[in-house]
Length: 179
Image (cartoon, rainbow, N blue to C red; front, side, top):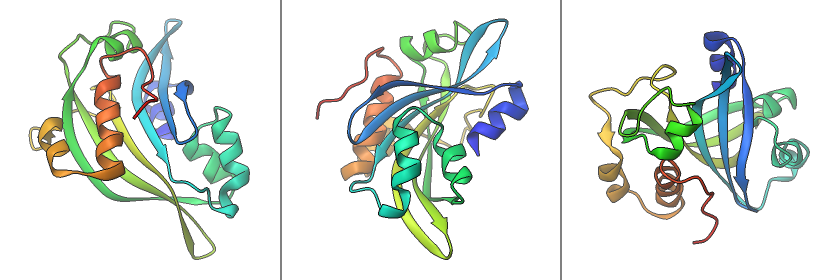
């Protein structure tokens, strides 16, 4: 889980929900250093609606600001990431601010887009499509990752919208809830 990886690598973990609507959430998954929050993952989650009845209780906690991975695991679900696609994007002013100035605007970031399913008792429940951008100290971009603009041109539907909104959020301090 991303939360455990951040905690083990950087010594702490927290989540700030930066914006949320009925079907989307923008969150800063951070660690703390010298009293400053450092964004390790900027995550744009597109919740797949309607929520499966088996996921309603953990979903309520997640919508209240809880960590997705930790909450699903605590509810007895295993997380299954399917169809992961990797790309790279440039840090914008908003990501620079979330990293407490630790990385500059234009720094290359690794990104990942995937579908998250929750599995329990042999059943998989679709939960969300998630796009994440990672601080380079957390997940370094690879030369083999394609530019995010190239990836966007090959996607459509919810996947494209989710990745577009993450790319927009790297630069902008407001959660884009229209579209």
